[in-house]
Structure formats: structure tokens, C-alpha cells
Amino acid sequence: MSLRPESVLSPFGGPPRQADLDALFSRASFGRVLARRPEPGRSVAPTLAWVDRAALAELRPLLQICDRAPPAERAWHEAPVIELFGRGERVATLTLHRGLALGYPGWNAAATLVRPEELAGWLAERGCPASPGATPGSGPESAAEEARWPEGAPPELAPLRGVLAAAAGGRFAGAIEALSALGQARPAPLDQATALLEWLGRDTGTWKAAPRRDPVPLALLRVLGDAVVDDAICAGLSSDPARRGAARFVAETIATRADQKRRSERLSGALPALREAARTSEIVGSSRAFEAALAPPPLAAPEGTRLLAAAQHGRLSRICRDGDHVDALDGLSITRFSAGAPEGEVLFALPGVQTPLFAREGRACFRLNGRVCEVSTPGGPLVATEPSLWSRIARSPLSYSVARSRWERARRRCAERVETQEQMPIFLEIDEEEEEAYVELGAAGAPLPRALATRALAWFAPEGNLVTWEGARAGSARLEGRPIDLAAGDDGLYVLVEHAPGEHAVLRIDGGAITTSARFQVEPCSIAHWRPTGEGVHLLLEAPLGDVLVDVARRKKA
Image (cartoon, rainbow, N blue to C red; front, side, top):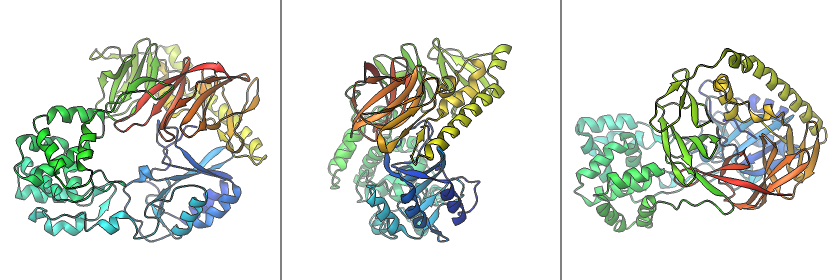
């Protein structure tokens, strides 16, 4: 199912209230615990446990909240979530942070939990790993805060020590104030970077520690900016602590393939000195962390798949198959990936904004400054499209909303019927990116979301590996593997199944006939998104330096 970003805290919501949770639970009939927060374009979040009505009744009193301020939130993206469902629809997504705080998108802040130890026990009974720091004061930062504040801080920052120690939201409170004070004493940005690198070099914490906890100088260097720090490194560092700090900065801040390539080229003259500094730092694992950050990972597709694209800027989204190539957003660049060239060629670099995207006949269509544009070759001219009157009428928002409302009503009727049988159904949903592309670019030719165009309507019941579908030839099938997710294709219903940890396959159901792919091997938590396309399926896999796109071909009858 397509997961919406409902776990993101809204700045426009109200204060946390227990009455809000009570109302949500009164509408829910089952739920599930996910390993991470749902995000746009990343429809598969690993399910850790299913929660039936009886388990929901046990959970409800454990989510009591109070008025105490919650702990500082640094890793909501890594936090497990609890999804609540009723009548086949998502009622709410509740985010757990370290077992101590609860987030809900209708609130403007997180809420502190009253019974975190009992909640941790409830999760453990269902096989969900306990969050580190599930009891107040037991988090790694509370025990190691003083150890991770090394000597050697610039003296002009001493009055701000208490402020800088209070971390929030992945950044340190007072970072801008600290850099302002540093700038008054050291006007040259290179001098500021050098002072912070020397301070970082005196920190004795583990490099690339998990859970992630930046020491203060590293957090300040991130705010100062990579370009300034790289210039300071290239200009030459005279002290051993500064070189150690520079080696650690390089190891900690390479997050994408583009980062790796840029650093390897930009700092080529300084790398031997940084490598030696990492080797002699006397911190366990520092040399290994430095070498791993600069070593290009092998571009190889998992067994049973074929490599199509490798993100250079972290994440791929808006993936569109067009003939023998794929167009996608790689970060903020519209990039074309062809067979045998997974690094891709940039068609157009967007000016800091996202856009819906679809591809047709060698052209990538997108929105820019309120207009629908096309580009067909790398660095080629942009062409603004002018849709015909008939296209605007046939693809009007009104005609789309009518089709969508009919689909939603049919789905609700099925949900009510299924829930009377005490099943926990997960229903097929409309792909968010397909829907947004249609709404924004439909008049220029973007296709309807597949669920609407094919009138696909299906669900699976997780407790029995049972998949059921509606339509002219309704039916059901009990699958050999465990269903994970559903998707509508142009030629039928698709089901992603797991046969064993790491062993998956994709099934296509068309009028009762089932076609299956060969089984393929991927890490259980690495599948971020998938969609049917042509004679196979695209799989978007999370990888250390950026997403990898592979495809799987259908081969045989089940």
C-alpha cells in the first residue's frame, strides 16, 4: 500500500491531548508496528508485528501521555511507528521515539509517555526490538555527554558551552550564535574551519557511531558548510589534531556517491596526510571508517535482479520507464539512466524544488515555474508544452475526482464486508506519485494512476497469506509466501511476497491466473519502493551511498 507521510509532526497542529489518542483508538480495529516512518515515494516499510483487536486493547492504556517536556528528538527517521487501521483505511500513524515520546501529525509537538517501560515490554512480546534508551536517563547521550565534549574548544565559545550541549532536531541549539561568536574573533572562514577541525581532532568518541550522535565541533562544521571546510583542508593544516579532525570530517560527511567522487577529486592532494592521521589517531576503527568512506562500493545487482540505476545524490524518486531507459529524479536532478550506464546522464538540474515527472517517447515532462516543460537530451533546450483543449477537458480534475470517488466507495464497501469476518485487511491504495503526476501533468498526457485506470481493487489478510481481489472476475488465492505489499499494474494485480528472510518474489494475478518472477535475494529491510512496469517490476533498494534501482522479470506460471 502507498504510505503517506502522516508521522511528520505538523507545525500547524494543536498541543498533544490524550483525548486525541482515545478518539483514534475508538476508530481502529487493528494495526501494525513498522520498523521506520513512512515517507513519500518509499512505500515499503518493514512490518515488525501485526496488532489485532485484543492487542490494541492492551496497547491503548500504555500510550498515556503527560505534560512533561519530551526528550530532544534527533532521529525520528529511525523511529518505529504504530499504524492504526479501521474499515480498511489508515486511521493514524504514531511515531515512537526511543520509547519515551510519541509523535502524531495532528500535534505541534511530541508528547512524553507515562509508561515507557510497560510499552517496551509490550513491544518485546511481539518480537519488536527494544528502542535504545527506553527508560529516562539511559540514552547514550546522557551517559557519554561529558566524554563527548573534548578539550580544545576555542576559548571564545566557552560562555556558550551549556547552550551548545543541548542538542535538538539533529542540530545543536545555538549553532548560529556560536559561529557568530567565532566569526567575531576569527573573521576569515578558513580560520574558523581550522579551529573547529582542531577541536574535532581532540574528540575521543567513536567515528560514525550508532545511534548517530555528532560531537559539538562536527555539528558546527556541518553548519559552516562543506565548501569552506574543504578549502581549509586544501590550504594545509599545520597541527596533528587538525589533521585528525579533517580525516574524521571526511569520514563522517560522505553520504552519497556524488560526495565521494567530489571529495576524492577535490582533496586528492591532502588525502595521504589525512589517511595517516586516521591511522595514527589511536581511536579504534578510525582508519577503517576513513577508508570505507572513500572506497566506492561495487555496483552489482542482487541475485535474481538486473541493475538499472544508481543514485548519485542519495535518493531516487519519480521513476518513469520509457522504452529502454529510465528517467528519474536523482536528488534534484532529472537524470536519464540507460542499460549499462547506471550512473546516468543529467537532463536538467532543478532549481531547488521537487516536481512531478513522467516520461514519454524520449521526453521527460515536469513542472517548472508553474508551466509544464519537456526536455529530451542532456543539456538540451526546455520546451513548454501547450495541451490541447480536448486534452484539458478529458483529463480535467472533475472527471478524475469522479473516478477516484467511485473507487474509494467500492473500497470502503469491501472493507466493511471483510472486517465483519474479523480479518485484518491491508488494501490496495493509489500510488501517491502517480496521482500527483496526473493532477499536475495530466493535461499534458500523464496517465491515470493505475489503480483507477484498471479499476484494481484488492487486499491481503496477513494472518493467512490470503490475497483477494474484486472486479469482473473476483477471486482469492492462498499464496506460498507472505504478502508484503500490493500494487496495480496495467495487466493485473501485483503482490510482493517474502518466502524467507531476504528471499522474495513478485506475483501477477490476472483473472485468476498467477504468474510469478524467479525468487530474488535482497536484504529484508532494503526494499523502499516497487512498481510494475512492462514485463517486470522495478525495485528501489536502499544502499549505503544512495538508492539502487533494479528490475525483476516475470518468468513462469505459479
